[in-house]
Image (cartoon, rainbow, N blue to C red):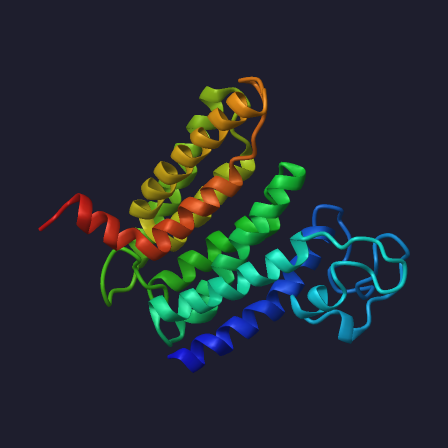
Length: 256
């Protein structure tokens, strides 16, 4: 298991490098395939040995080899976070056909988080295919985060998708723009992967953490109550809590 988790960590670091490309180019409507990565400042193409996840950042001391421009800490952070998530998924759920699906889910949540932080959008290119994949895999591959040795099931997936989508659509209407369409589709995707229980736990954790951060910004940063704070990162955090700790939380809250 330690060897498998280590391999997953390395694989996650490599995929994390690609996620950085998606995070930077996706919202700017640039191709994620070509051209090859280059320094945003001097436009010098990045050599393969300078593009090793995390390690190259440390060797280069966080600067471009050519022009000395600082490289954003976000790049190694995304790589490391994705690698750790992959290792955690394997350790928690074990080996099986579900691994690629869960890897894709956690990577999608990471991409959503950083794009929403920078641009306040959640791309449809992630959430819409995610809904379909969640529904398609629910009966054959997707484990139920709230049950031991059990698949999610197609019916539970459909109910989760509708619960997440409809609930957040109503919130978007009632909030009059306080909730965006991207959040609605994101929660529909989460529901398709984790069912209605996952939707409720994600919403609870996301709302709680979002409220705490919002209050902290008002108190310590002088932000106003009408300051817009992207909700996607908090929903992503809630989704990860539901994925890894959902059954533990439900068993604790409803003992016996």
